[in-house]
Length: 78
Image: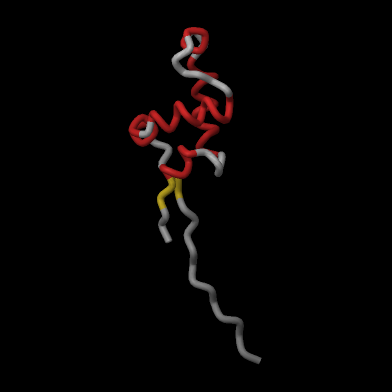
């Protein structure tokens, strides 16, 4: 019997969740919030909302594989 070959270590891609990276792609944030949450960031009613709720939705986009934001901020370390 031969030992099983050792698979090369594959590193999972990382997502750059820094504020600079997010702000750099703000147009993507606006589009994703509209598509996934139905939120228009330029609507006065949304602008009157407390920031934590909007921030929560924004960071939720980083956890959604289908979001544009996650795709543009993914760094392949492999």
